[in-house]
Image (cartoon, rainbow over all chains, first blue to last red; front, top):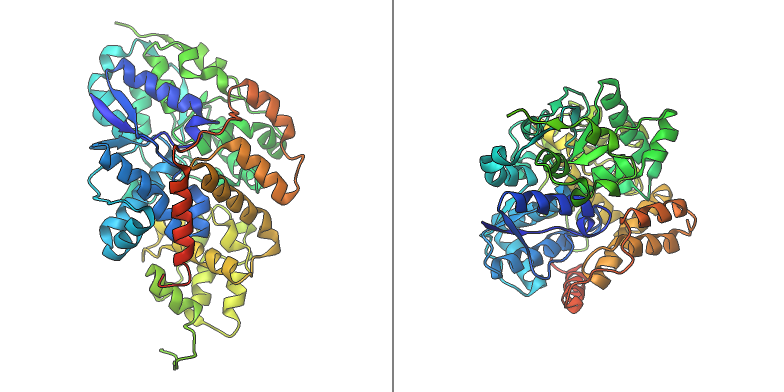
Length: 290
Length: 192
């Protein structure tokens, strides 16, 4: 099985371990993820904040490349990239004038025949059917499944049935032998792209998320977005200052958690790349009973 | 009510917004759910529901008030407002529109300068490389804001954790990206 893959910029930089663990899980389950050749940045918050046309044109180039390379489905693990790519695709499919204008900008034809998959859709469609035979460990811990904004909203793009209280991630963690907790902040915003320009806001919003997870006894927080990860993990010192308390709950990508349950070694999942040690989460793991 | 127009009259901010993004402020009946759910309501100078009210009323001076507000820059586009709105008003698109107008008319709130500079540094990095490199973005942002010492203590640990990649990944043919930026810019001010 071969699928298209759009890693996005963060997965080549600060969130390498998301890409690394996704590829490791896919490989284990016999799925090959093939990068779109010569993909470019989706434009992220900067493009849609400053230039509407650019925010459609930048993803359009990559979408057109994927079409030219004959990809039927493309996995986009980054929640923010997925949102921008899906928004661009939708805008061009729904409005002929936007399509015409954008094709002019990118100097390529766009057909709109590539199906974009969120990380949940990818796991449900291609990993779930075969996962049981590879799952050898039980994560054996209470996890707070954190969706943030872009995995949940807007629902016409994310395709989740319940954007206020989604359960897609919980289904994955239950499969991996964890106990997802019920909590209040699973779809609250972490501060997203303000990591550098308004670090105080990130510390405040991410602090609330972390505090609620801690109060409810979570032993790990699971995310599926590079921005959520860097705000909750790399910004932990600022969060500690904001909360005036030390919360050491590790933050794992959903594919790292799934990889651990499949017995993939920690180093192949990039678990050592985090600021907050993941040791606590790893030490809970037990062998799955036959 | 339609305002009298003549050839020299430029359409109002509200009218331009309705034409460009197709969001109609008149759909809002001021239930306030957007404001209640906004994660940054306590930091905003004008509440999200008030932004729509101001657009509905179009009282004298409303354009400057909106374009100079901090709120339009604080909006994180988390879409909590839109997903809870009983009238499905796409408030995050309103915010995007107002931000762009605010830059074009040089009305950006002084407290939002760093946020704007971050976005600009981000786009410049993409225009040069086709992809975002976080080290380049950080350096570019620091030079723009002169916050030179911000986060320098993070660099060593991030480097050793393999999180910093000083050599930028680039698109093979960066000219293609530059061309997209140029064409979009040329088109601005024309038929948007």
